[in-house]
View (cartoon, rainbow, N blue to C red):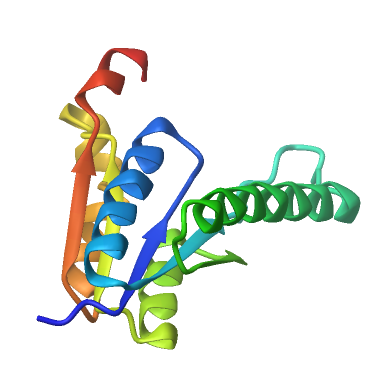
Length: 151
C-alpha cells in the first residue's frame, strides 16, 4: 500500500489532536500530503416553540472560527516540514469525511475516537464506525486513553 494522501478529520478535541499527531508520523514516514478536514453540522429539524432560527452572522462566525483554527493547525504542520492543507465544510461529518476522501483521492484516513459506550453509543453511534463502513480507503482510528476521564 502506497500512502500519498492522508485525510484527518478534526473536531478540535484532544482525541482529534492525537489523530493529527499520528497522521504527522505517517506523513513524514511516507512523504505524504496531509489534509485536515473540519466538518460542522447544524441541528436541523429541532425547532422550539418560538421557531427560533440561528442568525446568519452567527453561522458565518462559526464557519470563520473553524477556518481560522484549521489554518492555524496547517501552519503548525508546515512549520514541522509537513505538506499540509486544510478545508472546512458544512454537513453531516461522516458524509463530509467520505466525500473529502473521494475528492482528494485519500489513501488513508486517520481519525480520533471518543470511545462511546452504553446507551449513548447505541443511540448516537460513532462517526468513526460509520466512516469505517463507508470510506473509500483504510481508516486508522486513534484513541487517546489519557482523555477518557476528561470527557
